Length: 180
Image (tube, rainbow, N blue to C red; front, side, top):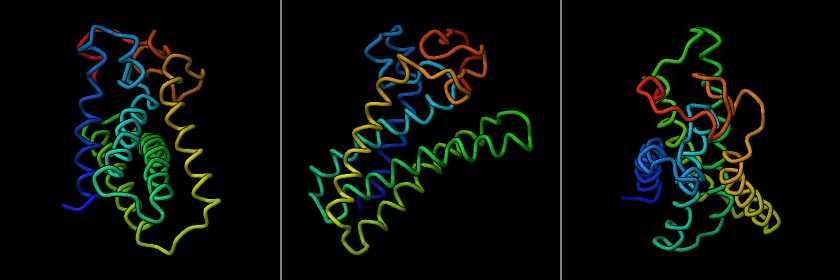
């Protein structure tokens, strides 16, 4: 199995588990850093991005460093960050509501697209070392944002729980309708 397929499976499975781990943990503040604490778009982006960052470390350990590795991992992460809100809010313009099957498909498709684009970057001509350093810095910033923006969410639509209108951990409500 190649790295892109392995990454797709790892990120998807880990992301699905991270959707529920905060509730399973009894709302642990430490688990909130990596798991979804509400149904906001940001939290769904986060539960795909955290495993993508972890996969980057595993991929480096398993398959060793290759030219363009850092740029490829940044492309995978950026794809997730752009694709999820772009398509989610795009389809909501037409249907005016969230559709669970589309939301799940969107989550999986964003990961698949990110892995595919990452594989293309790995196969392309080497990027300048400056680009590698910039991509590394951006990856670290994205990972830090994942950890911090649940605890200190920005008061904007991406971070707003559509069920109760709250933000971050204060939006968590333990009831069946809370899960998309």
